[in-house]
Image (tube, rainbow, N blue to C red; front, top):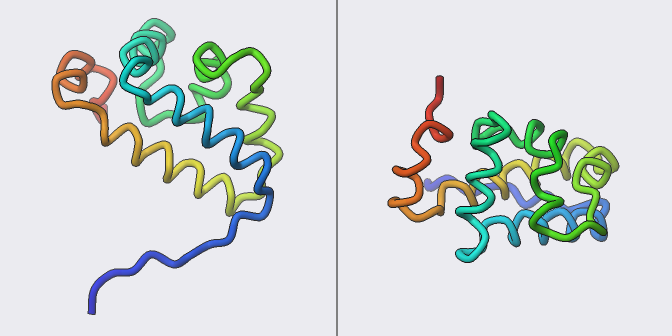
Amino acid sequence: MTFEQAAIKVQKEQEYAQLEAAIEQAFRPENVERFLKQMDRKGIRIRDLDGALSKRVLEGLAGSEVRAKQLYDALPVSDQALIREFYLSKLEAVDTALRHKFKKLYQYY
């Protein structure tokens, strides 16, 4: 039997979609290096989504109309978990050369 992730329905679809779009924007090939530089400059580890939200890193890339932290806080815990999983999947898909360049961000300790 293979592992199958349980399908969890998004409860607050509008807020979820806006936050997902902001994360998608940050990890686009033309933006990802700038995103990583901002994370490095602000001293945030790449897996620290809460830190990125509280220091408003996503807003600089997604446009000023998106308030990522407010959107995230408005989501129920299940939607927050889905967003966190989406964010982690995007950061793992970053090009290997960029991951090596920003290896300090990707370190676990």
